[in-house]
Image (cartoon, rainbow, N blue to C red; front, side):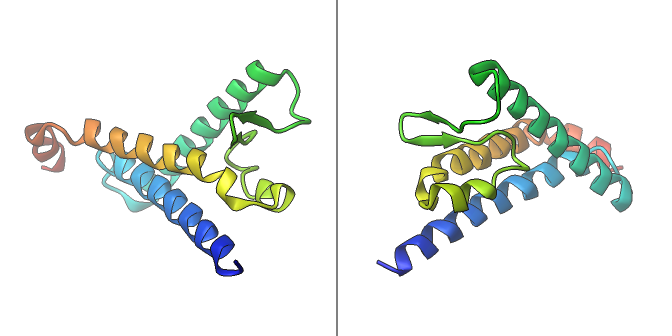
Length: 124
């Protein structure tokens, strides 16, 4: 039973890594400079975090209690995500949220890179 929480922590980190990699893939289509790409990816991350916190505020009205939809924990912002691992004690309750983040960002990458002609024109 000791190895099972480690598996869920690793799965959460993998999903969050996919999310961050996809954010940088979305921004690198528009920016050729590496520094600008890093700044754009960070601004996109903060925008998504702000939307998440706004959604959280609309649902709860205050950010004092964590919100659960079924058995899935919805964190109050992506920046506050890691504190819920310690407070909840069970990393698998946040895994569906992390998985949804990774899948939504993957869909975003597919939408941005769907037309090959536009990708080739932007790279020239």
